Amino acid sequence: MSDRKIELETISALLREQSTLALATTDETGEPWVTPLYYIVDEELTLFWLSSKASLHSINLSKLSRAAVTVYRHSESWRDIQGVQMRGSASRIDDPKRRREVIKTYCLRFKLGTIFNLVISRCDLFAFRPEFIRMIDNSKVFGNKKELRRGELGKWIAFDA
Image (cartoon, rainbow, N blue to C red; front, side):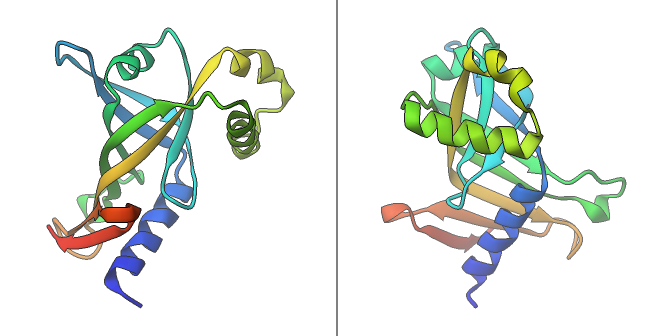
Protein backbone atom coordinates (compact mmCIF):
# COMPACT_ATOMS: atom_id res chain seq x y z
CA MET A 1 0.00 0.00 0.00
CA SER A 2 1.37 3.45 -0.91
CA ASP A 3 2.36 6.03 1.72
CA ARG A 4 -0.27 8.40 0.31
CA LYS A 5 -3.02 5.80 0.70
CA ILE A 6 -1.96 5.01 4.28
CA GLU A 7 -1.89 8.73 5.12
CA LEU A 8 -5.34 9.28 3.61
CA GLU A 9 -6.75 6.33 5.58
CA THR A 10 -5.17 7.64 8.80
CA ILE A 11 -6.57 11.14 8.20
CA SER A 12 -10.00 9.78 7.32
CA ALA A 13 -10.08 7.63 10.46
CA LEU A 14 -9.11 10.55 12.69
CA LEU A 15 -11.76 12.80 11.10
CA ARG A 16 -14.45 10.14 11.54
CA GLU A 17 -13.51 9.50 15.19
CA GLN A 18 -13.66 13.14 16.25
CA SER A 19 -16.71 15.40 16.36
CA THR A 20 -15.49 18.98 16.72
CA LEU A 21 -13.41 21.13 14.41
CA ALA A 22 -11.93 24.58 14.95
CA LEU A 23 -12.77 26.80 11.97
CA ALA A 24 -10.65 29.88 11.24
CA THR A 25 -12.07 32.61 9.03
CA THR A 26 -11.24 36.25 8.37
CA ASP A 27 -13.36 39.27 7.63
CA GLU A 28 -12.77 41.63 4.72
CA THR A 29 -10.18 43.58 6.75
CA GLY A 30 -8.22 40.43 7.60
CA GLU A 31 -9.42 40.25 11.22
CA PRO A 32 -9.27 36.54 12.22
CA TRP A 33 -11.96 34.53 14.00
CA VAL A 34 -11.93 30.93 15.26
CA THR A 35 -14.96 28.91 16.33
CA PRO A 36 -15.56 25.29 17.37
CA LEU A 37 -18.24 23.40 15.42
CA TYR A 38 -19.66 19.89 15.26
CA TYR A 39 -18.98 18.37 11.86
CA ILE A 40 -19.33 15.27 9.75
CA VAL A 41 -16.96 14.11 7.03
CA ASP A 42 -17.54 12.28 3.74
CA GLU A 43 -15.33 9.87 1.81
CA GLU A 44 -13.65 12.75 -0.07
CA LEU A 45 -12.62 14.41 3.23
CA THR A 46 -15.16 17.21 2.79
CA LEU A 47 -16.33 18.49 6.17
CA PHE A 48 -19.92 19.66 6.78
CA TRP A 49 -21.42 21.74 9.59
CA LEU A 50 -24.53 23.75 10.44
CA SER A 51 -24.34 27.38 11.53
CA SER A 52 -26.58 30.31 12.20
CA LYS A 53 -26.72 32.80 9.33
CA ALA A 54 -25.92 35.52 11.89
CA SER A 55 -22.75 33.90 13.29
CA LEU A 56 -19.54 35.78 12.60
CA HIS A 57 -17.91 32.83 10.81
CA SER A 58 -20.95 32.45 8.50
CA ILE A 59 -20.86 36.16 7.69
CA ASN A 60 -17.11 35.94 7.06
CA LEU A 61 -17.53 32.94 4.75
CA SER A 62 -20.26 34.72 2.78
CA LYS A 63 -17.65 37.33 1.84
CA LEU A 64 -14.46 35.26 1.70
CA SER A 65 -14.66 31.49 1.21
CA ARG A 66 -11.03 30.76 2.19
CA ALA A 67 -10.75 29.10 5.59
CA ALA A 68 -8.57 26.89 7.76
CA VAL A 69 -9.67 23.98 9.92
CA THR A 70 -7.99 21.87 12.57
CA VAL A 71 -9.19 18.64 14.13
CA TYR A 72 -7.20 16.85 16.84
CA ARG A 73 -7.46 14.21 19.51
CA HIS A 74 -7.55 15.36 23.11
CA SER A 75 -4.19 14.78 24.75
CA GLU A 76 -2.48 15.39 28.06
CA SER A 77 1.06 14.87 26.77
CA TRP A 78 2.97 16.20 23.78
CA ARG A 79 3.70 12.57 22.88
CA ASP A 80 -0.02 11.99 22.27
CA ILE A 81 -0.66 14.96 19.96
CA GLN A 82 -2.32 13.77 16.75
CA GLY A 83 -4.34 15.92 14.43
CA VAL A 84 -4.77 17.56 11.08
CA GLN A 85 -4.48 21.14 9.92
CA MET A 86 -6.23 22.02 6.66
CA ARG A 87 -6.62 24.94 4.27
CA GLY A 88 -9.30 25.19 1.65
CA SER A 89 -12.60 26.82 0.84
CA ALA A 90 -16.03 26.64 2.39
CA SER A 91 -19.35 27.18 0.68
CA ARG A 92 -22.98 27.09 1.65
CA ILE A 93 -25.00 24.14 0.36
CA ASP A 94 -28.23 25.45 -1.12
CA ASP A 95 -29.36 22.47 -3.19
CA PRO A 96 -32.41 21.15 -1.26
CA LYS A 97 -31.78 17.47 -2.03
CA ARG A 98 -28.09 17.59 -1.05
CA ARG A 99 -28.96 19.63 2.05
CA ARG A 100 -31.52 17.02 3.18
CA GLU A 101 -29.04 14.16 2.65
CA VAL A 102 -26.24 15.79 4.60
CA ILE A 103 -28.49 17.04 7.42
CA LYS A 104 -29.99 13.57 7.82
CA THR A 105 -26.49 12.11 8.28
CA TYR A 106 -25.53 14.98 10.60
CA CYS A 107 -28.62 14.46 12.79
CA LEU A 108 -28.00 10.71 13.00
CA ARG A 109 -24.33 11.25 13.92
CA PHE A 110 -25.18 13.62 16.76
CA LYS A 111 -28.50 12.00 17.77
CA LEU A 112 -30.37 15.29 17.37
CA GLY A 113 -33.80 13.78 16.68
CA THR A 114 -36.72 15.89 15.55
CA ILE A 115 -36.60 18.40 18.40
CA PHE A 116 -33.95 20.40 16.51
CA ASN A 117 -35.81 20.46 13.17
CA LEU A 118 -36.94 24.09 13.50
CA VAL A 119 -33.49 25.27 14.56
CA ILE A 120 -31.81 23.30 11.78
CA SER A 121 -34.21 24.65 9.16
CA ARG A 122 -32.99 28.15 10.02
CA CYS A 123 -29.29 27.24 9.80
CA ASP A 124 -26.96 27.36 6.85
CA LEU A 125 -25.21 24.13 5.89
CA PHE A 126 -21.56 24.53 4.92
CA ALA A 127 -19.09 22.27 3.15
CA PHE A 128 -15.33 22.69 3.58
CA ARG A 129 -13.21 21.20 0.84
CA PRO A 130 -9.57 20.94 1.89
CA GLU A 131 -6.85 21.69 -0.64
CA PHE A 132 -3.94 21.17 1.76
CA ILE A 133 -3.69 18.84 4.75
CA ARG A 134 -0.89 18.55 7.29
CA MET A 135 -1.12 15.50 9.53
CA ILE A 136 0.76 15.72 12.84
CA ASP A 137 1.53 12.59 14.86
CA ASN A 138 3.88 13.04 17.81
CA SER A 139 3.26 9.43 18.88
CA LYS A 140 5.83 8.43 16.23
CA VAL A 141 8.37 11.16 16.96
CA PHE A 142 8.16 14.79 18.07
CA GLY A 143 7.27 16.99 15.12
CA ASN A 144 6.32 14.09 12.83
CA LYS A 145 4.21 15.45 10.01
CA LYS A 146 3.07 14.52 6.54
CA GLU A 147 1.54 16.86 4.00
CA LEU A 148 -0.90 16.31 1.18
CA ARG A 149 -2.05 18.70 -1.53
CA ARG A 150 -4.92 18.29 -3.93
CA GLY A 151 -3.56 18.02 -7.44
CA GLU A 152 -5.24 17.88 -10.81
CA LEU A 153 -8.59 16.10 -10.93
CA GLY A 154 -8.80 16.25 -7.12
CA LYS A 155 -6.18 13.56 -6.52
CA TRP A 156 -4.11 13.89 -3.35
CA ILE A 157 -0.34 14.28 -3.73
CA ALA A 158 1.90 13.46 -0.75
CA PHE A 159 5.16 15.24 -0.08
CA ASP A 160 7.60 15.52 2.80
CA ALA A 161 7.02 18.41 5.17
